[in-house]
Length: 471
Image (tube, rainbow, N blue to C red; front, top):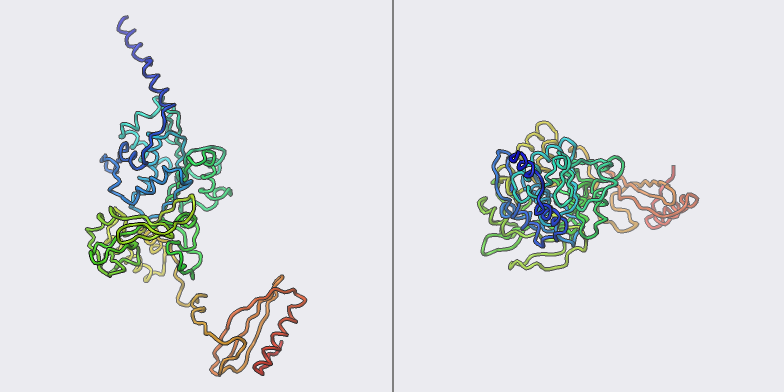
């Protein structure tokens, strides 16, 4: 009987255990950087079962985005990058570890589907919690508090691992919402709007302590194929929907390397334009010196994020004025990815180009550009199609209201649309060449449209003594 009584007494909670559990509810947040907390408490479990500490030195470019997530200066963090950069491991797993250990609060992870949410929970979150002693100690001891899609901790904070739907992203308040593979989610979730807008609404209640993350490799086509980089905005992404549209709304930080040549030491972006596909190496655009692949790790360790409107001096001083916004946005490309070799980048792009030449299919080419290079894809027109930008590039400068030499006759057409008209003229030469100077528009009414056009014809005809007939 005595033995049985002792066994039963051992199953009861002690006053000391109760005090420790209650103390978790009133423990103030630890004031350390999110990257420092992740390095201190998080274990990374590989697919082969290996367990290691998360280290910011493995992916140095992830330290600043992760620290921005722990800052009250920003409401959201946007990260655009190729596969094999370690972005999900740092920004999702690492931030969850930071919140559990240092600043408990309710959170939501949004995966692209219910199946992916289940897989992410079992393969990433459960393994991280099981093999990280400090995080495991934070879990609620009650078995019903932890299942595949819901995790509850001793401090009372809740973590959901769900998928994009109006039921998941509505009617709940979360201190943080983390959206992974954003460009693989529909732009309009169940007719309620984008996942980012719906998710950021869930964190609004928490004010400056709320955080919304969207991370992804690009997956959308460039919407304006004739777009050109603005002179004053070198960090702007091409016009597209999805993750790069969110990036453009932020402060537009790009990843820079410093040339290792002592005679140069200038900064540049490791992107497709600074990569030699033939030799499969990056090069400095300032001195044209190719870089040994073995130097990539050192370049990343010394790399810097530079916002739009700022630049780096040779001494590493950041000068200029950044964009004013509460969204910290980051974009890096394939050559800087820690777990992607340069030879692999060049070979995959070469094979995709070969497939395109043989089959005229752009699917493989788009996949490589999106996921391996971390760039939006520009659909290639057939050679028989004409680009409006190419036509504009062929335009000739002609004195206003004059007829060039060699023109035999002119035609003009008018399109009346609501409160404006659009007029176009064509000229025909001896060789049968047709030239269209372009459209001109003017605000007018339908009643005066014809009269306005006649007046223009008369003035033009008087100046050049040419008659434009009507039909």
